[in-house]
Image (cartoon, rainbow, N blue to C red; front, side, top):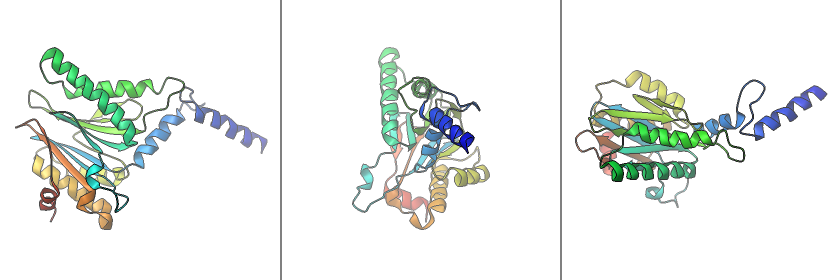
Length: 242
């Protein structure tokens, strides 16, 4: 009994410090940050042959809320956007930093910054918070996607602890397991932006089931033709899913 109590005390010590590894090599605060993301609303990103698509669940929790005021999708630059799941106030801080980096690059080099550089900027800031005492990890994951100057389409997933991966299609938030399984089956490299939007909204509808309504969905895309962030209206969304 005494040994069990001591183990619990020891675990609480590792649990409370971001800079201390547990005996089995884990940073528990980082793991809790990942759990925060899994409890967040669902966000889907799909890299299509002619652009990148984002579909998110705004999770409107009250009839008194104005759905249009809920922001979980962000424009970083004309050609780059992000969708967040987790603590959205954390996401805003990261997006603000990425927006500033994009503006600095544009002024300095008179050209658009590439998506990977923005992802590295975001993840560097996240990583610092995993090795500095007195800080906590960012409790948010971001899907960052864009269309580069050469027309290539990129989509990245950033983890709360600063790691990032490039994906063809990815999902974060509460619907991660169910929707990822469907993306594995339904995603094709030849998918177009229109098809990607329809797939994303359909998968979100299948996950939410009776709770689904168009007021809680945001969908947007950046295509290779205009290289500009374009958000869909409710009427356009309804045409996608009949």
